[in-house]
Length: 115
Length: 137
Image (cartoon, rainbow over all chains, first blue to last red; front, side, top):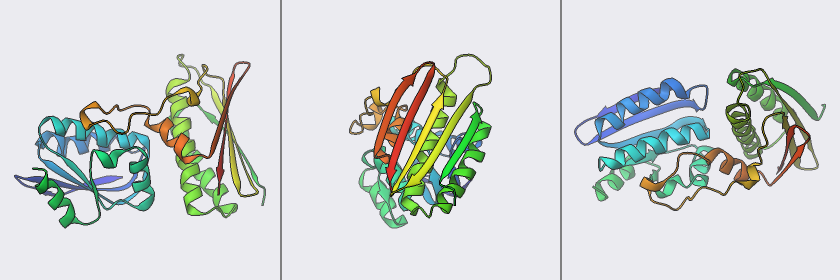
């Protein structure tokens, strides 16, 4: 599991996660993820296209960060999850509180529309 | 191919990787479709994580027994532990319609199991929790 910061500017943080998000990987990832997203207090795009497995511990990481960002008036959008991962996100009802988009342009549009 | 898988795990998160590996091989040997494999892997992962996290208050070693069977288009998984009584069916699903500031962090793992499995049965036998999960594939 690893995380890359694709872009971090005045408006937006764009990160990409890779591999499995489960109990084995969550410790380091959670720290890095929070440091690069919540701490900046900007809207966040989380690219999930290379995540092949998401367990509930990963759901917790995402909702905890999204809740913290929400307090600062910032939102989180999830980008391009694998169908299995998207199914987990929808089963957990996350699509209601963090939009799931399938291309970067739509993700940016959603954030602009709700700014 | 044998259609039974028997695994005994210690209550240690380090056991999960080996469990996933064995379960994956089992699913492959039974030619399960990918959607079924994902559901079974996720549900067992969540259940065992939950057991290791909450079943025991002591710091002693305990074991968790897992048996998986496959046949007639159904995967059946039995999980047994000697932890405190825990019936996942008694837990109400988290409120998935509330706004983000009211979302709770917990309860999602159990909710995933209840959604991904077609059938779940719990019984307390003596000092043991026995959970049976079935998934049509």
